[in-house]
Image (cartoon, rainbow, N blue to C red; front, side, top):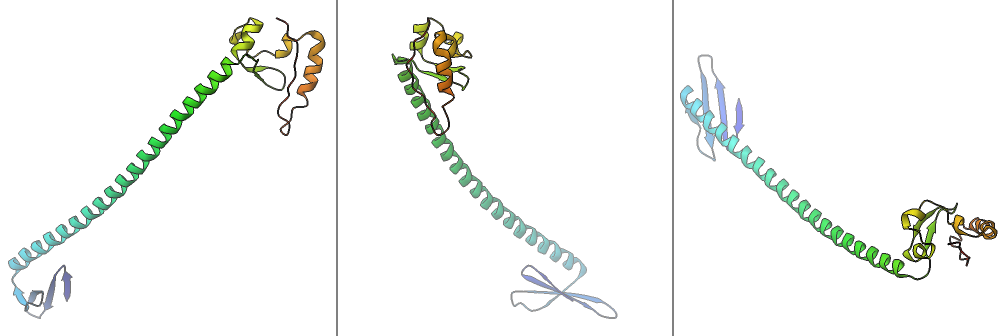
Length: 173
């Protein structure tokens, strides 16, 4: 019986009166081994195999660590880009909000039923109500009685294809 063990070959010969263990490595001649020598030899071979396996495991760990480091660096770059984009968005929102708030024209966003979801400061000053007092209420409540029906009918013309309506109305203050 011949068993490969790393760089060594272990040959076991079974004879009627004894068992012979022989080994050879890298073109060396076969060497008969006693039981104690065989035990020492096996410990050396096993130790060598364990070291070899440890090296393989470390190589795998190093390769995976390199992959994870590359992934972490890519993620850090993505986070930096996202943070930069969010900062730019906040600046644009502030700029837009400043423009809307400094308008002298009335700017009102509302739902289809006239419920106000946004009002700028100009309309708040004109109607003499705070933003909190206006939001959630219908702007139709601030129109003269004769105008409400006409404006409500105009709201019905707003669709996805025609999403805006511009009208000039009198307002009760």
